[in-house]
Amino acid sequence: MDNRFGDIETFLAVANGGSLASAARALRLTPSAVSRSIARLEQRLGVTLIRRTTRSLALTDEGRAYRDRMTVLLADIATVEAGLGQAGQGPRGLLRINASPSIGAMGLLPILPLFMARYPDIVVDLALSDTIVDLIEERADVAIRIGPLRDTSLRAKKLGHSRMVLVASPDYLARCGTPKKPDDLDAHICLRFSFRRSVDSWPFRIGGKIVQRPVHGSFFGNSGEVVRQMAVAGGGIARHGHFHAARDMEAGRLVEVLPDYNPGDGEDIHALYAPEDRAAARIRAFLDFLEEELVIAP
Image (tube, rainbow, N blue to C red; front, side, top):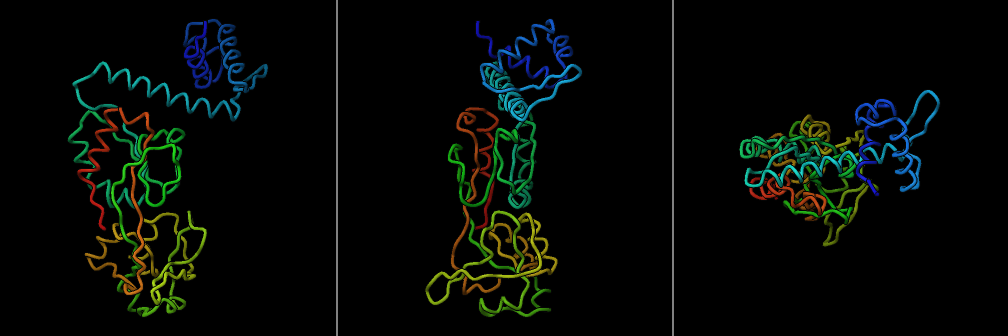
């Protein structure tokens, strides 16, 4: 009889317990039964999950990857089953969100208390990172990302669009001067990103054409939030989505630079999620909430 879930459960017990004996005690099986279960699983998958010696065992790379994915899968199964038994009680459970620091700081954090008050049975786990994440490996239910979509296996809900702007602090411009045309940037510090950028250039509309102009500077930041704070501190000129700089511009901490040369480009902001997860009440509630409450400065 094929007992796949039993074999997976046994493997996770070994992986988490560190030994066949500890897994056998936890599952109330004999060590030989645990060993046979692991052997069946490895034979079915065609890979070695655990390397055994006379004194210890260790997970292979494949074993670690399988452990991580199966842990998430079984947790999701438990969530689905719990949800079926709690029909009519409202969304509940753990909601894992991964967002870029910029959208997290400017968009999510101000409205999350409202979401948590509206859905008190949902526990929010928020991680901020500009790294493009694998939802399964990072155990995330929803990822909020800015810019072009790369993973077509995920569903995307568009949350907004924001134009790009060049900004600098009044203090920096007072010290270093205000550029009048793109060529003047040669004399300025341009704050750049250390991620996701293959060309160190910014686009400008010059003579009716979009021209990519190389920029230079002595600072790289690994997130939009780092670069924004550096610009506010007077460290140079930055290129940001307007939604990210809007509050600083309204408060006078940042001002727009070279607006007459703005090419009019922008970035879309999406919530990404696995197609099979859309039915989960907690995820559906969060996506609907974002559509209602998240404000993106255009």
